[in-house]
Image 1 (cartoon, rainbow, N blue to C red):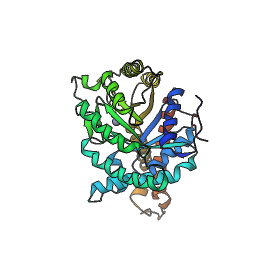
Image 2 (image 1 turned 120 degrees about the vertical axis):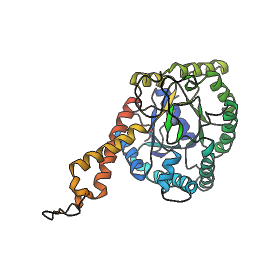
Image 3 (image 1 turned 135 degrees about the vertical axis):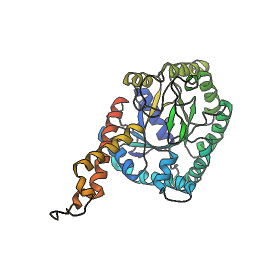
Image 4 (image 1 turned 90 degrees about the horizontal axis):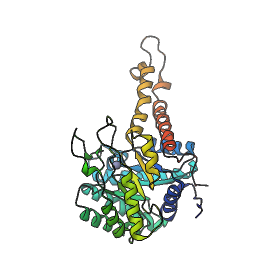
Length: 358
Ligand SMILES: [Zn+2]
């Protein structure tokens, strides 16, 4: 099956599903980068355009709250409207970057299901007017609960989301480490069995969710959020392969029937990333590394122009420093750092130059 080209801009529904298939049949994945502001969203779009790759832009609940304004007293409203605001910005601007852009949300555990409900209220209202949803996909992460509860709750959400042409990402098995308040830190020498997904659980997910709608699975194979000293947990991508072949054999399907997601990719060995791509991983999350890439240039910039951050005018000779403290100068440096790190990510995931948008 040849790949149809997509229109540049945000892709949802059928266009998104085609993009997922194109990644898998092409043996590459898209980075899913967390954004928290128009600055980071623009840097992500800039990077995708520069790399000629399609991209997934996502928000955590905390990222959405920051987008909405972290001083707001009602943090639920900030989280919901912040996410919607970010979405509107990307919908408006994405087509000008010439690539396909997926809009997604990151981990929502039980506590944050009301956030997803709020986003879906806006998404349904938007769908009535535009015929497509705000977000391409949401993630629900009930991996800390019983698998049956996880799957039943996920099925309920997918029923609602499929009606507005959305996809759902679920998590089976636990991604180690902590991401924006979700998850838990790893203790040295702790038992790590819970960090590995059972292929039987993935099959149960497929059986329940596939008849309802489009979904993807964040399967855990020893991946960890954040960057840790190596050696704590072993990456075992063969778990992805075993999950794919169990579903494929049980239902007599073509290879790699599942759409798999790789969380906690920051700092992973490149060879294990490449191996995971062969097992139907189409999305790999990145946050920690791009946070650092955004922060480092401001440190360098302040080092180089320290006086401009203390005085508007030089106290000795009256030199004006406006051209150094103008936020467009140093925020721009951060954006370039972020975009450069993203380009590395497109190369690691082998999506560089492979945008299917025309
Ligand atoms: Zn994650």
